Each structure stands twice: as C-alpha cells, then as structure tokens.
Length: 407
Image (cartoon, rainbow, N blue to C red):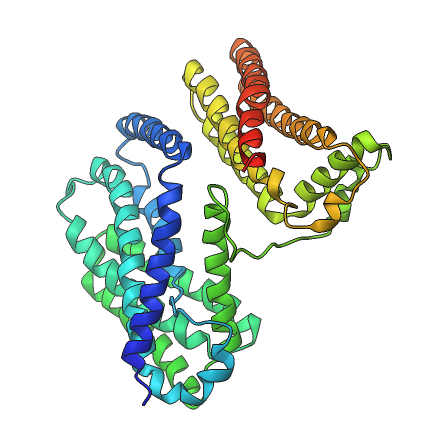
C-alpha cells in the first residue's frame, strides 16, 4: 500500500544526508577562512556606514526592496526525481500530504534565511527609527506569514506551463511584497495594511479557483528541483568531485576572438582546450564574472587603502582556488588522452591560462581603484595582485595539481 508519509521521510532524509556530506567538504576548505575575513571586514564597514547615516535616510525603502526579493523567491522544495514523471503521476491525488510537508520544510528553511536578512538590515533601521530593535520580533512574524503566502501562491502558479504567467506572477508578487514591507517598516495605519492583506488573499484565491481542476506540471517541478540542486552541486564541486553534477555548456561565439589567434601547434593544444572549456562552461566563466563584479564593488566602495589591496588579493585567491577544478574537467574523457602531445604541455597550458585569468582580474581591480583617483593605492594593488598571482600559480596551484595527478 502506498504511504506518502514514508515517501516524504525517505526523500527528505536522502536529501539532508546528501547535503550534509558535501557541506562537510565545503566548510573544511580554505574558502571558509577567507569568507569569515570578508564577513568581518564587511561588518566593520557596514557599522561605520550606519553611524554616518542621517535621520532622513530612506532605510524603510531600502529594506523593502531587499526583503521584497527574499519574499518573492519562494520555491517549494519538493524532492522529486526524474522517474517520478512515470511512477508518481497516477498517485497525484494521494500526494497532498507529501507536498504540504514539502511546503512546511521550505517555509522553515527560507524563514531562517529571511530571519538572517532581517537581522542584517535591522541595525540600519534601528539607527534611523526611534523604535530601535523593539519591533524586530513583530516584523519577523508578519514577514514569515507573508513568506507562507508567497510559497502558497508560487505553488499555485506552477499549475501553469506558460512562462508569461510565471514572469507576471514574479512582477506582481514582488510589487505587493515590497509595498507591504515598506508600509510595515514605516508603521503605516493598520487599516492600510489590512487592505493589502485582502488583496493578497484575493490574489491567491483567484489562482486557487482557476487551478483547482488542473493537474500538476511535473516537468516544471522536477526541472526546478534539478536546477536548485545543480547550483549546490556546482558549489560543492569546487571542493570535491560530485558525480551527480551535470555540465552546462554554451557556444558563446562572440568570445571566439579571444582564442582565434592561437596557433595550431602541439604546445598550444591543451591551452586551446582549457581556454575553450573556460569560455564555454557556465561554471568557470560565470564564476570569474561573479567574483570580478563582487570584488570590484567591494573594492570601489571601501575608502581604506590597505583594505582595498587586501580585498583585491582575497578575491584573486577566491578566483584562483575555485578555478583549480578546471584541471580535472576532462579527466573522464578518453579522447583527451589520445592526443599525440607530451603531457608536460598540459600542465604548462593550464597554469598559463590560470595566470592570464588572474592577471586580467588584478588589472580590473587596479583600474577601478584608479578611477577613484587613488593612483598610489592602484599601483600597489596591481603590484600586490601580480605578485600574489605569480606565487599562487608557481607554487600553490602546481602543488595542488601535482597532488591530484598522483592519486
């Protein structure tokens, strides 16, 4: 006899075990030390920034914009698998309890993230408002209820296959979330808040009535679950091999100019392969772009000279460390081993590409410091970045690649 409670427990248990196994690798890495340093630095400057805020600063608007995003992104973690398209569809009517438990677990996890976001933003609110932190618990309870509404509404929207419905739902829900959050933080009249609550209830009820006779769109639910897990597996893959990770590759023809001038010789064979892999794989190019953009913003908005130099080196380390898996990207492809090319060219090509990528990033960081008019700091940041890049590639990355190759 089918037991949906046991199915949910088994699926949730496997997922938690899977996440726990990879999280151990993540939190044992050097990256955690760097992140703690970054968090400490960001907290210091955040506190300094808050102390300089005037009483007219629009803290409520900023909080509403940020919290609105956290509220709107409300996927239900359903733990579904590819095979469920075949085996569970006939049992859809018996899975109401299964999906209800999935919704509760999603509310618990996303509610914790919402709590952290609110805790980070509250010092800014407390500095501007005379209420201080006294309203923190009340804010969180109300926002948690709003999060539950978003989860329920998001679930109802998944009965539709039209992408336009999903896009408009995100726009409408974000607007409602941001407006409600702003009025809440602004301590608006209760009747005004109650009016928005009625609108929220009507919004959900209208979709509930229209989807009551529809069936679940299993393809959308399973694809969404796989994409969320793929994002986590890509992170875990930076620290250990993840067999479940599916590679995503894009042509990106507009980047061909970078390698079009590369000569067709044995010495350049692996350099061409690694360069193509870096440019076409979303894991590596996306990682480089994200860290460069985040690092640039962090460096640009920090006025302390030494802090800018340290941050540029830290982001260079993050980039170099997280690009090391590129070395093993083709390790399971037999055709790569058939190249009539000496193996020492592979190591030289990989480290040459890694050095070029890190040098480009170091130059970008220095340029943005120079834009601020800090010529000396920009020069020192560039010099420190180039020196760190040389040491990282020459010693650290070569030892790591050597260790992996000997296994």
